[in-house]
Every structure is written in structure tokens, then in C-alpha cells.
Image 1 (cartoon, rainbow, N blue to C red):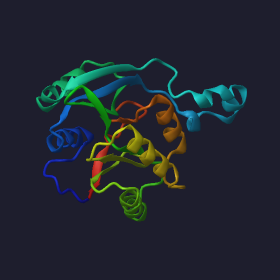
Image 2: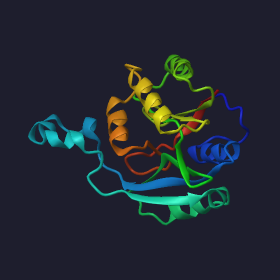
Image 3: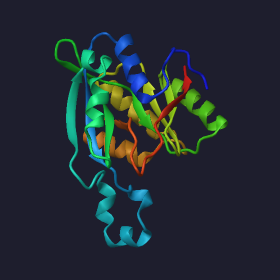
Image 4: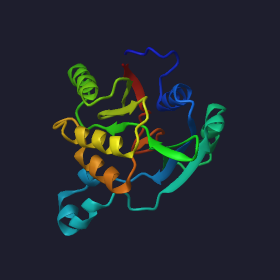
Length: 205
């Protein structure tokens, strides 16, 4: 494990680090949603009976909530999470509010390749080639999550998403499609019954 930023271990730690290196961030936006099997996990018979499910990301509504930077740095997010139901998950969205009431994106991506030293090294190389000079790769369970440290405006974010889509064999293309439709990325930062593993940092560059 490579961990240059002292104390950066979980996704929560990554978010605090992003706030510290981007002092212009005023608030982060989080999403609360209930766990459910994704399209790939559904039985083939279910997919055949209802192919429209392929276009849905969640069967239940999502709750969005903004937290100001100081509240996050002082632990309000942890208190908020403790008040949720067992089956609920917390995710971070890529959209942030910066000074002047403007918005930007954290570069974020959900990968679908198996975890291995070779794939981890390749992901770092691909992300750097895509224009990401610094960031964190976290092992999420079956694969990896990525957070870049340099904020992107809308056009640059869409270019980043397109470049990630070209990483054939590594990117979860369904994730990219859903996030482009929503206009924001979302990555899980908590655990639940179906997602018992907390995403942990395995590479910083």
C-alpha cells in the first residue's frame, strides 16, 4: 500500500484531504440510498422479463444532502451516518460548491476490473494518461474507486468521463452511462449488508 498523505486510509479521510488541498470548496454533496442488486447481479430471467430495468440505477428515490466544509472536518458526517437505517448507504457526489456559489466536480470513477497488483499499476498509468496528475485509488471490494485531487469544471469533467469510458476492460461502462445521465458521479463511502467492505486507499500518486 502506498499512502503519502499521513492518515489517509478510508474514503472519509480522502474527502477531508480534498477539502484541505482545495480551500475554495465551500460544501460537498452527499447522497443516501438503499442497497439493492445491480443489473449485473439480477438473474437472466429477470433481465429478459423486464429489460427496462437496465436503464434504472436505483429502484428507490435518493436523498441529497449538502454539508459545509467545516462541519465535515469536525465530524458531522459521521454523526449523520450513524442515524441512518442499516440498509442505507452514504455516497459522495462529484459536485462541489466553491466560493462564489459556483460548482465544480471532483474527478471520480468506479472501476470493474478484478483487484490485482498488475491492474492497480495499469489503472494508475491510465489515470495519469487521462490527465489526472494526483489522486487516490481505493479498493472497494470487487474492484477499485478513484478520487482525483484537482477539481474540474463541467466541460473538463465530461472529457474525463469520456476518457474513462475508453479504458476498455477496466471501467464500469454502465456506471459511466448512469453518471452522465445524472450529471454527477457518486461513489459509496459507507458499508451495508450487500456492501460490507469499506473502501480503503491502496495507492496515492
